[in-house]
Image 1: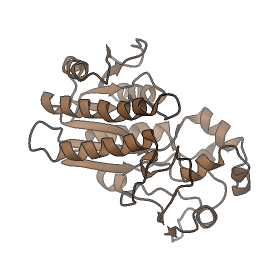
Image 2: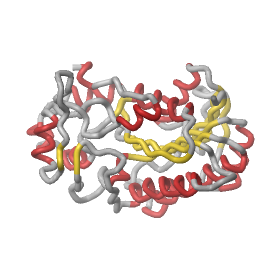
Image 3: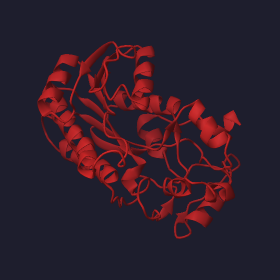
Length: 300
């Protein structure tokens, strides 16, 4: 099991949560970032240009890490030219996978995204075949951020096929929007989260295109730990979600109204949650022993 973990993008919002959690859990942590020097959330800081293959190799070698968590990518397609967004997600992942393999680092966790399915930042309404979506659902991205996420997963597939000079265990974590208590309270608790309220919201298109999905930082960081502790061989993709949607309207009604062409696989049984997520995380439960527990409704 890893004792030392390198985290790219450790200065970011999610990266900070990950470093703080791993540090508290007893791991030696190394922050590989290009931005401001910040040693308050990690044991070691190494300034690294993740688009420079030599720097990535050198930084990983210097980090003496047993595992890598790659979060340091351009997070949206609206702040940089398209090719920069795509390059940041794809080439930085390739450099890390290649360097990790050459250096004998057996475990790499990559930050993919819900956007890989063709939601999030797409201009048109998302096309969903069945709900809740799982890892078998088709991916139809068209914007540079989403295409980059799909491409980094394909690169991970390729490295996993190598017989040598590749990490043994690679995970692609398809994160939705990651919230903390303050963001969840502002966005969910203080707003009208009924279907009518969502339709009247300026963010309705985005909410619909992301299946009203989210995950709290406390669940996100435990998933990252589960990924770096995993021991399966090869590359696996995992959907990530809170246990429920961010809506006050039951999931069956959301599915019928917002995704009428989708085959909705309704939960059954006495313990079924009427607000259950439209994203299936059972694969993460089976392979990583991870299950989300935090719901925004506990703040209401």
